Amino acid sequence: MLNTTRNTIVFPSLAIIDLNFGIQIRTMYPVAPDRTEITGWQMMPRDVADPVKPYRIDNALTFWGPAGLATPDDVEGLEQCQSGFSAINEVGWSDISRGMNTEEPTVVDELQMRTFWRQWNAQLTGGHAVREGRPYDASYRVSNAGGAR
Image (tube, rainbow, N blue to C red; front, side, top):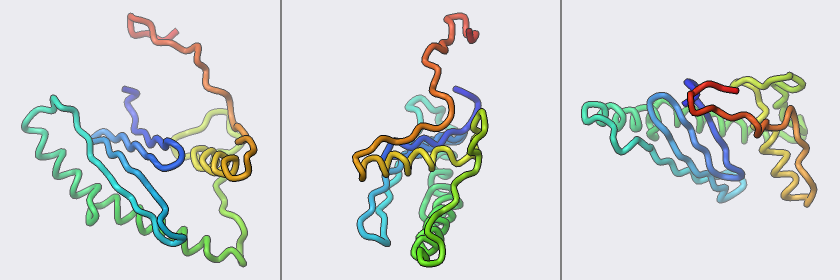
């Protein structure tokens, strides 16, 4: 739709990963201080052409599967983060400031992480999550002719 990839997090535990070769839906539930249960589903449109279906299924296994390219890499990153977080006596915080104080966030900025943890903190403390950046412009519409106004 926007000719780009998207990672959408629905607070607190749903991820929608929309790439050009498939959509992965994941839920993440902490079950212990050092363990998280992650379940993933690979989605494809009902009307995908028959010759494309085997490619999409193979990709779901070889990229997203437990021995694929993305999932083990993600798990390794999460395990290393947890290991680092356990060193709280050395460092009491994690730096997620990439893209802070920029006018327009990019796809590699860490705004989504800051937003997640601000909301998490608000839920725990009963406070309000601090907003960052410009508010969403709800007046933006796409005309019937397909042009933006």
